[in-house]
Image 1 (spheres, rainbow, N blue to C red):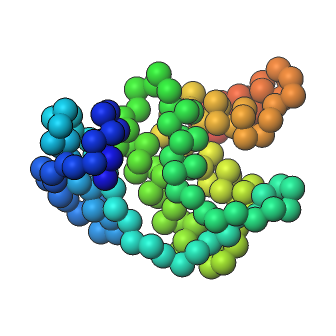
Image 2: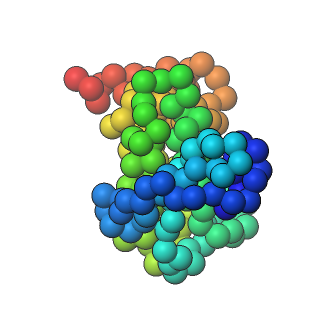
Length: 152
């Protein structure tokens, strides 16, 4: 494992814990050179799931893409990284439970939006605006109105 701070290749594991769902291991590591600590997550390699994109291409499912989108949506919001990772894990678990070999990227986006709506309204709107590619303010306002009606 390379240190994300200095790039040194040797570290030591300071702490290991099983995740809440029991499907991954969280490890706290310390670089032997710069002494910085960082966290890694180990997941069991599962059955390969393909994601069918809008243009017809297929690519392998990547949890990191989901987490990256969630982190961008939650930027400068009072949402901890642990909560964002929990959402990504929840999305991943739901996808593997519901789909066997292939999932449309549209379906992934809908699942992520539903989870973000429960987590943080602003993060939900940010993700929806990029995911649904709002063309103008009118589309944006329609999404907000729907969200406000849901909260009543």
